[in-house]
Amino acid sequence: MGDNKKNNRNKIRNDIIFVAVLLFAAVVGILYLFVFRESGNTVKVTRGGELYGIYSLSEDITEDIHTVNGGLNRLVIKDGKAFVDSASCPDGICVAHPPVFRNGESIVCLPNKVVVTVISENDGDSPDIIA
Ligand SMILES: [Zn+2]
Image (cartoon, rainbow, N blue to C red; front, side, top):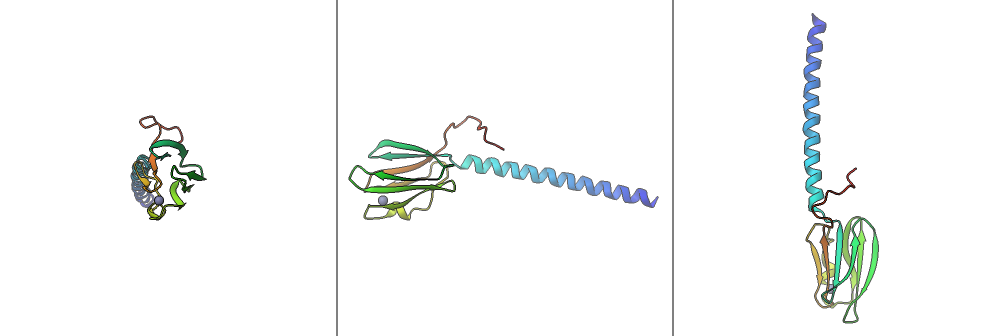
C-alpha cells in the first residue's frame, strides 16, 4: 500500500517534470525563432549610393572602405555584429554608433556617404543552419 502511494506520487511528479520540460522547450523554441527572425545575417555596404559589398555577419572581418571623397571608413564585423571602428569623417557619428546586427539596422556616415545596413538574405526561405 505504502509503495503504491509512493509510486503514484512519483508518477505525478514525473508528469509535472514532463510538462515543465515541454513548456521550457516551447519557450526556448519561441525565443529562438524570435531572435533568429530579429537578427539579420548579412551586411550590405553602399558607398556614394552604390553597392560596395555584401558581407556575412557570421564571419569576422575588417574592411577598409575607401570613400568617394578620399576618406576612409573601417568596417569591422565581429561576434555577429557590425560596427565602424574608425573613420576619417569629422563628426565621428558612425564610429560612435553602437554595433548593428538586427535586420534593418544601419550605420550611416553622411560626410563619407557610406551606409552599412543589416539585411536578411534568403528572406522567406527556411535556412538550413538550424542545429
Ligand atoms: Zn562617419
